[in-house]
Image (cartoon, rainbow, N blue to C red; front, side, top):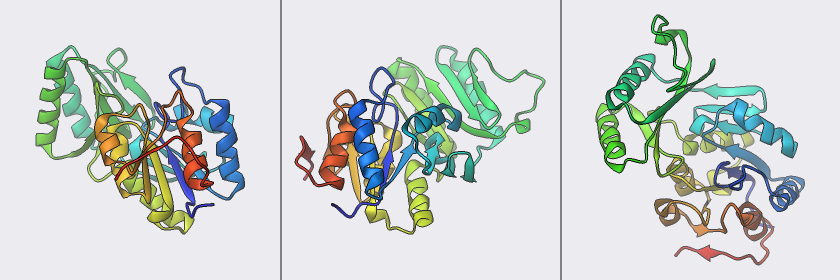
Length: 258
C-alpha cells in the first residue's frame, strides 16, 4: 500500500457519473480504502444538505468539505469551521446579475439556497443571512468573460468554476486547498499524504497542493495540466482507478504527467 492517508473527492463530474449516481465499482473501492485506514472525504462545491445524502448512501462518518471550502465538517452534522461572505458583496453581485439580465445566478447561505427565480424579498436585509457562495451561469462566452473581469477587479473573491459555463465566488483565501490543508491538520497528517481528485477549476488549488493531484479524464484542460496524473472519466469509475493505482498500488489505466 501507498503512504496516502486522505482521499479528498470532488463530487459532480468526479465521484458521481453523469446520471448523478455513485457506481458500484466506486463504492466498493471507497470501502476498501476506508477499511485500509484511509480517510475518504467529500471536497465539493455543493452545500452540506446536497452532499449529505451521498455520504449517507456510502455510510461515511468522515470529514466533509462543502461549498468549495467555506465549510469544513469534522464529520456529518459536526461543523468545524465556516467562512462567510460579506453581505455587501452579495448585494453587489446580485445587482451585477440584474445588470446583465441573461445569466442564471444563485447563492448559498446557511439558511438556504436562493436563485434567479427565488431571491430574498427586497425589504429583507442582506445581513440577515449567513452567506457562503455566489454563482453565475451563462453559455455566452462574452458575458462570462466580462463578468469575470468585473469580479476580479473587486479583489474580494476566490473565483473558480464547477463547469466551463459558470463562475463561483468564495471569500478571498478560501478554497478546497485551504480546507484540505486544515483537514490534514485535524487528522494529524501531512499535506503530502493527501490525494485530491477533481474535474473543474474549483479543484485546481487542491490538486496542485496535495501530495498527489489527480484530474478526471473528463476534466477541463487546465485541471489536467495542473494535475500529477489523469485518470478515467466519471462514467468509467475514475475514482476506483485512483484508489487501485495510488492507494493499493495496483496496475491501472493511467496517464501520468511528467
